Image (cartoon, rainbow, N blue to C red; front, side, top):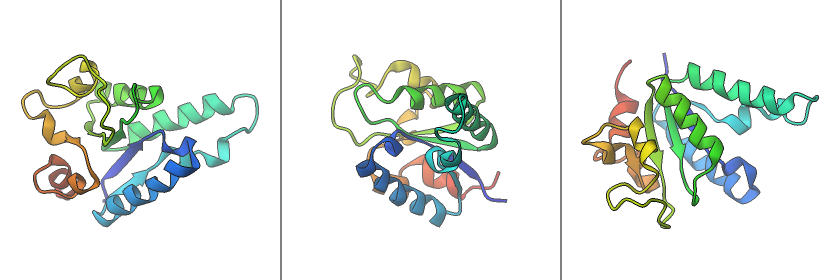
Length: 154
């Protein structure tokens, strides 16, 4: 059975960044993962009926429950609020979490952590940097936990 990855991101809100999702999805699928990308999975729900926004949110939460990990793209200053909520749900569910940020802007008051300190509660205390990726190459790098996680069995 394939591991399932929830790709938390805000890229689907922009035509330009939406194309970047294809590169991530291709890499994950080549690693043998099943990718749950929320914008793609909820297309049929968008703008359908008065409860469409709630239905999308509920669908995303259900997908997080189903997945083995959350790979969160946390670009922006601050990062997207929805992505932060998805990480919070992942923390509560004790999911494996990986953060991706190739945004060079400072987004923290800490010299140690590049994001809000609460986000790092989702990562291992002493080895958090192995779950923090800053480039596409980091995803398949043997120096990072993601590659090992993707190739391990459940």
